[in-house]
Image (cartoon, rainbow, N blue to C red):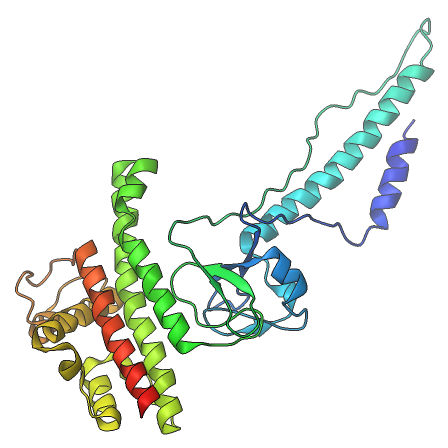
Length: 332
């Protein structure tokens, strides 16, 4: 009575793997995630380039630079979906075998017998694995200058996933464009989300943009400083305005204030101090912030409110500062 089921169970006992289809998104990009537990940065790579350019032996995280073989970059969502897909495939194969046994038992049953035993098999569902999408208006798409691998990400990224190339100037300018995009999403979010939810997400993006702006300038400064001097600056030196300005003034003869002017420099100080509060104080104003920033619109205990205009101004100041430093380094 259970011939089909027995055959299916024997086949399953010999199965060592189940192929799981992973589809690209609507734009032809595959979702990937850094396997380093301290990073877990999510990004996308063009499916065609993943097959034809990216090497099986080594893939690089665009954010932290961690490297691992190509089989290590599935996202957590993909792994969970794959488990569900595999379980669905097994369940469906067993259900199919049981339905076949049930149909055969009915064919064999004698209509006039005193007792008739048949099998009824119900349930089961088709296993469908949808692509794990991370579609986001602020996602930045870029192409590596070295190997031409196309990839995209949200926020700040520094390394090509295919060759590991780090173009300091290219990455710096691309990141600032992402920041500007993130700063202008409030209206678009309100069209697709409830107002309260849209406001929370918009504010979160603005706060992240403040931190990404500092990080982008830190990275480009570190790389150009090392290229020029042949030595690395002290850790996080370019997260501190005074220290960074002194380093560049010693090398290029120009301080941040001489490049930006006094008024712009005063605004930059406030933005850097706000970034520090967001990163280390959850945005809660303390006495150190008031002393260092000279920002008179807050009192101790209040929480920062980051506005779109401030993020755009911050990005503009950093772009001017970064471009001038890169230009002077190229001329020197």
